[in-house]
Length: 181
Image 1 (cartoon, rainbow, N blue to C red):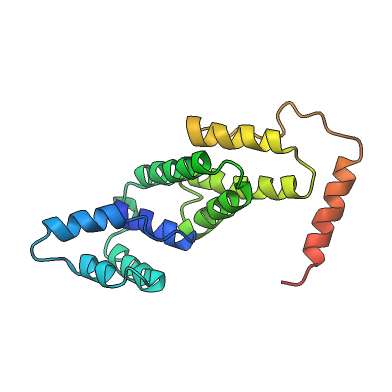
Image 2 (cartoon, rainbow, N blue to C red):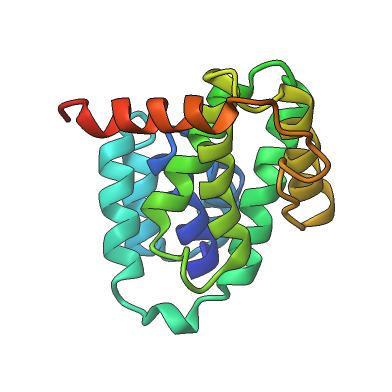
Protein backbone atom coordinates (compact mmCIF):
# COMPACT_ATOMS: atom_id res chain seq x y z
CA UNK A 1 0.00 0.00 0.00
CA UNK A 2 1.30 3.43 -0.88
CA UNK A 3 1.13 5.57 2.25
CA UNK A 4 0.61 9.30 2.29
CA UNK A 5 4.27 9.63 3.29
CA UNK A 6 5.28 7.55 0.25
CA UNK A 7 3.10 9.74 -1.94
CA UNK A 8 4.59 12.98 -0.59
CA UNK A 9 8.11 11.64 -1.06
CA UNK A 10 7.28 10.60 -4.64
CA UNK A 11 5.71 13.98 -5.34
CA UNK A 12 8.77 15.86 -4.05
CA UNK A 13 11.11 13.67 -6.10
CA UNK A 14 9.05 14.11 -9.27
CA UNK A 15 9.04 17.88 -8.75
CA UNK A 16 12.83 17.74 -8.36
CA UNK A 17 13.10 15.93 -11.70
CA UNK A 18 13.56 12.38 -10.35
CA UNK A 19 11.30 9.68 -11.74
CA UNK A 20 11.05 6.15 -10.41
CA UNK A 21 11.47 7.07 -6.73
CA UNK A 22 8.33 5.10 -5.82
CA UNK A 23 8.98 2.04 -8.00
CA UNK A 24 9.60 -0.29 -5.04
CA UNK A 25 6.47 0.86 -3.20
CA UNK A 26 4.40 0.63 -6.37
CA UNK A 27 5.56 -2.94 -7.08
CA UNK A 28 4.72 -3.93 -3.51
CA UNK A 29 1.26 -2.33 -3.74
CA UNK A 30 0.57 -4.07 -7.06
CA UNK A 31 1.45 -7.41 -5.48
CA UNK A 32 -0.45 -6.94 -2.22
CA UNK A 33 -3.57 -4.88 -2.91
CA UNK A 34 -6.74 -6.70 -3.84
CA UNK A 35 -8.56 -4.84 -5.23
CA UNK A 36 -6.06 -2.26 -6.38
CA UNK A 37 -6.60 1.24 -5.05
CA UNK A 38 -7.10 4.12 -7.49
CA UNK A 39 -3.73 5.74 -6.75
CA UNK A 40 -1.96 2.43 -7.37
CA UNK A 41 -3.71 1.98 -10.70
CA UNK A 42 -3.04 5.55 -11.80
CA UNK A 43 0.65 5.32 -10.91
CA UNK A 44 1.02 1.94 -12.60
CA UNK A 45 -0.60 3.12 -15.84
CA UNK A 46 1.43 6.32 -15.93
CA UNK A 47 4.93 4.98 -15.22
CA UNK A 48 6.31 6.67 -18.32
CA UNK A 49 4.50 9.96 -17.73
CA UNK A 50 5.84 11.94 -14.73
CA UNK A 51 3.17 14.62 -15.18
CA UNK A 52 0.38 12.06 -14.91
CA UNK A 53 2.06 10.49 -11.88
CA UNK A 54 2.37 13.90 -10.26
CA UNK A 55 -1.31 14.56 -10.92
CA UNK A 56 -2.25 11.19 -9.36
CA UNK A 57 -0.11 11.86 -6.29
CA UNK A 58 -1.53 15.37 -5.85
CA UNK A 59 -5.05 13.98 -6.06
CA UNK A 60 -4.23 11.29 -3.50
CA UNK A 61 -2.57 13.77 -1.13
CA UNK A 62 -5.49 16.19 -1.35
CA UNK A 63 -7.59 13.64 0.56
CA UNK A 64 -5.67 14.17 3.79
CA UNK A 65 -4.68 17.28 5.77
CA UNK A 66 -0.93 17.88 5.67
CA UNK A 67 -0.70 17.76 9.47
CA UNK A 68 -1.68 14.07 9.31
CA UNK A 69 1.39 13.24 7.22
CA UNK A 70 4.64 12.50 9.02
CA UNK A 71 6.68 15.14 7.22
CA UNK A 72 9.73 14.44 9.39
CA UNK A 73 9.95 10.90 8.02
CA UNK A 74 9.49 12.24 4.49
CA UNK A 75 12.30 14.75 5.06
CA UNK A 76 14.54 11.92 6.30
CA UNK A 77 13.82 9.93 3.13
CA UNK A 78 14.56 12.97 0.99
CA UNK A 79 17.88 13.54 2.78
CA UNK A 80 18.67 9.82 2.42
CA UNK A 81 17.99 10.00 -1.30
CA UNK A 82 20.29 12.99 -1.70
CA UNK A 83 22.99 11.35 0.44
CA UNK A 84 22.91 8.30 -1.85
CA UNK A 85 23.07 10.51 -4.93
CA UNK A 86 26.04 12.40 -3.47
CA UNK A 87 27.85 9.14 -2.64
CA UNK A 88 27.27 7.82 -6.17
CA UNK A 89 28.47 11.00 -7.87
CA UNK A 90 30.27 13.38 -5.49
CA UNK A 91 31.55 15.51 -8.36
CA UNK A 92 28.12 16.58 -9.61
CA UNK A 93 27.40 19.27 -7.04
CA UNK A 94 25.49 21.45 -9.51
CA UNK A 95 22.81 18.86 -10.29
CA UNK A 96 22.54 17.81 -6.65
CA UNK A 97 22.20 21.35 -5.31
CA UNK A 98 19.65 22.20 -8.03
CA UNK A 99 17.57 19.15 -7.11
CA UNK A 100 17.78 20.00 -3.41
CA UNK A 101 16.70 23.57 -4.08
CA UNK A 102 13.74 22.49 -6.26
CA UNK A 103 12.66 20.03 -3.59
CA UNK A 104 12.66 22.72 -0.91
CA UNK A 105 10.89 25.32 -3.00
CA UNK A 106 8.19 22.96 -4.28
CA UNK A 107 7.60 21.18 -0.97
CA UNK A 108 5.59 23.81 0.86
CA UNK A 109 7.36 22.51 3.98
CA UNK A 110 10.20 25.00 4.41
CA UNK A 111 8.52 26.80 7.29
CA UNK A 112 7.72 23.69 9.31
CA UNK A 113 10.64 21.38 8.57
CA UNK A 114 14.22 22.45 9.22
CA UNK A 115 15.76 19.73 7.03
CA UNK A 116 13.69 20.81 4.03
CA UNK A 117 14.50 24.45 4.75
CA UNK A 118 18.22 23.64 4.72
CA UNK A 119 17.87 22.16 1.22
CA UNK A 120 16.98 25.65 0.04
CA UNK A 121 20.13 27.07 1.65
CA UNK A 122 22.28 24.46 -0.11
CA UNK A 123 21.09 25.77 -3.47
CA UNK A 124 21.81 29.34 -2.46
CA UNK A 125 25.29 28.54 -1.18
CA UNK A 126 26.20 26.54 -4.28
CA UNK A 127 25.49 29.57 -6.45
CA UNK A 128 28.17 31.37 -4.40
CA UNK A 129 30.59 28.54 -5.19
CA UNK A 130 29.81 28.95 -8.89
CA UNK A 131 30.44 32.69 -8.65
CA UNK A 132 33.82 32.06 -7.00
CA UNK A 133 32.83 33.70 -3.72
CA UNK A 134 32.67 30.59 -1.55
CA UNK A 135 35.37 27.87 -1.68
CA UNK A 136 34.01 24.49 -2.77
CA UNK A 137 35.61 22.66 0.15
CA UNK A 138 33.64 24.80 2.65
CA UNK A 139 30.46 24.08 0.73
CA UNK A 140 31.19 20.33 0.74
CA UNK A 141 31.76 20.33 4.50
CA UNK A 142 28.36 21.97 5.05
CA UNK A 143 26.66 19.64 2.59
CA UNK A 144 28.15 16.56 4.21
CA UNK A 145 27.13 17.75 7.68
CA UNK A 146 23.56 18.02 6.42
CA UNK A 147 23.55 14.69 4.59
CA UNK A 148 25.30 12.64 7.28
CA UNK A 149 24.62 14.40 10.56
CA UNK A 150 21.33 16.20 9.81
CA UNK A 151 22.74 19.57 10.83
CA UNK A 152 23.42 22.53 8.64
CA UNK A 153 26.66 24.33 9.36
CA UNK A 154 27.20 27.58 7.55
CA UNK A 155 29.95 27.21 4.96
CA UNK A 156 31.20 30.62 6.13
CA UNK A 157 32.27 29.17 9.51
CA UNK A 158 36.02 29.51 9.92
CA UNK A 159 36.42 31.17 6.55
CA UNK A 160 38.70 34.16 6.43
CA UNK A 161 36.96 36.69 4.25
CA UNK A 162 39.14 38.04 1.47
CA UNK A 163 39.36 41.80 1.08
CA UNK A 164 36.83 43.01 -1.46
CA UNK A 165 34.61 39.94 -1.24
CA UNK A 166 31.62 41.94 -0.02
CA UNK A 167 31.99 44.44 -2.86
CA UNK A 168 32.08 41.53 -5.31
CA UNK A 169 29.05 39.95 -3.67
CA UNK A 170 27.19 43.27 -3.84
CA UNK A 171 27.99 43.57 -7.58
CA UNK A 172 26.74 40.06 -8.22
CA UNK A 173 23.54 40.60 -6.25
CA UNK A 174 22.90 43.92 -7.98
CA UNK A 175 23.48 42.24 -11.35
CA UNK A 176 21.04 39.45 -10.51
CA UNK A 177 18.37 41.92 -9.36
CA UNK A 178 18.57 43.79 -12.64
CA UNK A 179 18.37 40.61 -14.75
CA UNK A 180 14.97 40.32 -16.43
CA UNK A 181 13.08 37.19 -15.41
